[in-house]
Length: 640
Image (tube, rainbow, N blue to C red; front, side):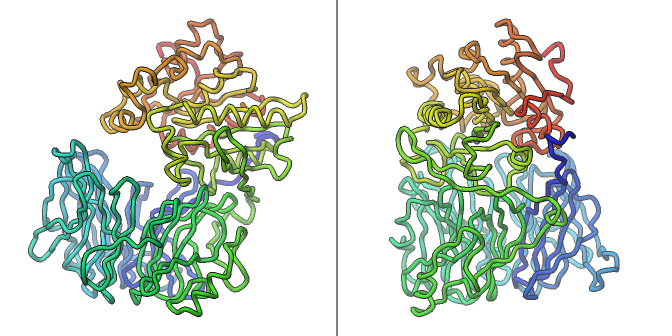
């Protein structure tokens, strides 16, 4: 790479976190480029320590969970529905220099997908939950020191989640099945009795709501649930097993989405995850006092699951300058279940750069963090045509005057940019390119009034917001600076192509990663799951909402900015035929491949292209944005 395209170190990440029932251990997968390793964490110390578990071949699909005694159960999923995977029981030795001792392995049954659960009990009941086919799930028990799988129960529908209601007999699961009466799929909470090999529906509000069991405390018999009825999701509580589930007003009056994570060890406090615009934060609900208190902490993005079995809380965390890793929230930052302690916590504001003194979270660095100099970002609010638009900005306070400015459009449509580490945006920022990533209308995390306008009206209000922002920003830039660059992924790529044609003079370049050309064409070519989502969200069937401006093939003739089109040949979400059709249309219009547009196909899937995982793809995008096209992929092959 040249000096203009920095050679950043391998992009690290930690994901797939799981915690033992007693909270002593955690496991996760650590990714660095194509290298995936399994880590086990000891959480009993003030500063968590980690070591690599030598468990054989590991990839991103591997599932691992720690047991209370320190052993690790690892599942390598099968390749395809008819293949067989493997379950391995590993015991990391006490000495860091010793090799991992593997107790035994057994084969998994054929399945579409599956995951592991372990009970918080001395006998370490371990389950494998599999999806046998599109209509049935099965529960298996992993038995013996030389493990083998014993079938327990087959259940119609899809099982997910998992909340233990005792030491290993009763398990609450989320159950999704086709409801013929309501005409769609809906979720409800069920309880499985492993001893009796039976199940029963335990939490269901209505025939049209999605109802899930989220958390349970065996100490107090407190139960936390969620329900999608009526409309927005609500959090419900049943305290000490008495009476019906109630939906506390203080828990549900926020316009920001909230999800219950777990109770503390004593069962008197409930940990809540709240999406607050582009960032997220932790809250504590005190049932006895019916109060919600924030936990002071850094601005960033959090993911479940969380572990809260002692003083600290452990959860996955990321920020623009922090690749995803394990974060530890100290007990001093967590509101206590007393009026005095809760009042002290309430007087502490949420910190934007690492918390307040004495309340700082600790995060475990990656090996490359000390030499990477990852770029930070800011959250800004910009005026839009229908209200304020929050955006993530790389480039400091003078980002508007940067020579190269990218407007990045997220996928979705019901999605958003999160205040987290993003490899592609890091590479752009490291190359001196300013980035504006706006959460226009249709983005999640801002309430239904911000989200609802795009449902049934794709490339309507959101396209208006994008064009409005670009015009306002261009008015503040020097006349000699290049116009902004559009960059979109998935739905954002569709939106970027439409924006490039809606006002051609606004843009200097356009990058489209895995685009589709219209809602009807995607509905026609995609698989059943994608077709269902497109039909529900795009407004198909409303003639007044499928006009020419919503079809890229009809409007691409107006695009004057050079284009970079990238698609994965193994994309099962948006078929590669969508980009191939756009390429053919551009050629029919007399556009020349090379000077006018570049077409790139990658031997990869949708996620890899949208997130620009391959190094060479990130370099190609950065070079294009800098005006230095040196494509290292094969482009424009005959027959496409």
